[in-house]
Image (cartoon, rainbow, N blue to C red; front, side):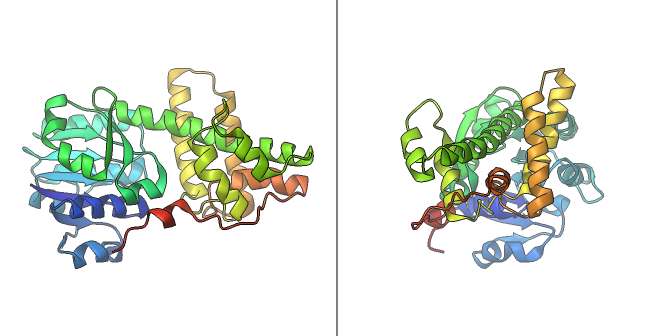
Length: 308
């Protein structure tokens, strides 16, 4: 089985490297050719377009920035629909609009392809290790055919039919972003009341307020880099999609929209490439306190990095 990979950003490149390490022959494409250097050096073939990737493989995996980019991969002038999709499996990891992705999936299926959604969570270090939780939507029989490819990248979490993976990812990121914003307020209030950040953090472990965000991301505040592996611009893209979901469903979303506003403020203050946890730095700076903690707070993705 030959596997294609489209979209070699920080997450995608590591996912592709894990597929390659699992022994699959690969064809790769990205808008920036240099992102493929490590894969090509280990035997992957470069392709100049999404269609050119699809023509050479049995399974194609995509992981691009968002809705506009994935629509180009499928409907664009050199996209999947310009060539044969017959018998090809398409696994998409992009965080995108469920409505759009269901439509794209139907178009690929109408041409004989098999769409599977598998958006991911777990941050860059999970992508490096190859154990990302993946929200997998699609037909059981089709997922079984490509199970080995998916499991080379992470852990399968079945969420139902095609399209549900995108819904699960948006809800996941909704809760993640709300919690991240709330952590900043809680940490600063605790600091001003005399409870030091590292003491507070240790005390929260295993309690009702504990979470992946608490364990994984708070040390980036202590270190002062605020986790640049996931920049504000990606947070804002996700939050825009979440806002659309809330509007489309008619669901009350005051907390979500307040969180979106806080992340917009972080982008305006610190720049769109600043780390996700700068949403907490807003509260820190306004209160004129520091949440730095002395120590060797090694970034999780550095711990996870394999020997190449």
